[in-house]
Amino acid sequence: MRKTFTAAAIVLAAAPAGGTPAAATPQAVSGAKTPAFPLDVAGVRLGMSASEARAALVKAGYAMPATNGVSYGPSFAARIRAEAARRRTGAASSPAMTDRVMTQLKGVGPNREAITVGLTAAPAGGSTVTSVYLTMPQDGMKGDAFLRQVIAKYGKPDGSRDQGMTLAWCSAPLKSVCGMITPFQRRPEALPNLTASVVYNDNTIRLQDGTEQDRDRERAYAAAVDGAAPKTDRAAF
Image (spheres, rainbow, N blue to C red):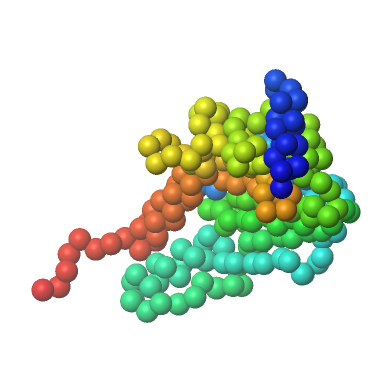
């Protein structure tokens, strides 16, 4: 563990002042105003469609099983129909899975990397990427080598924690608090962010949408249900 602490400190000290600029994120309609976040994991960016994410992983050398690791859920429209029906009748029913979208996609890389892509049903149809999680075993790649490659790809981190073993990159409005954990300010995870860590003997990268985008999606869902089954303004009594 001490070696990892030292390696992390060396990597941070040697980090360049800025990273290579990445291409703009292709943001799909999701019911949330997601700030553009340019970082990717194996070519997968937030806001990509399921087909775009799969194509990016294949291009990056990942094996993509046809069915194993793939999960589906009801589309946004199916969820609205089911909830609107429940509101009108009081009888709960499951959303129709005949109208389904991909909600998870997994792949295995050429060096035992494991990647999980999380997708969320979008109001415009289909689903879009809202999280990416990659793990790389440390018996195949040492933590210090992993962090050096991470910094070479993403540039100098905006923040760090765990004594330099977890590095963080945040959306522009939150770069000044990136890596911090405090209840007295807007948290770094409120907006899209990426973290890379070598804690607990695992090399990991996590790219995720922010909690504010999650709330925006919840509001879009609630508004859509209200539109499909408006609440009454009059009771029979």
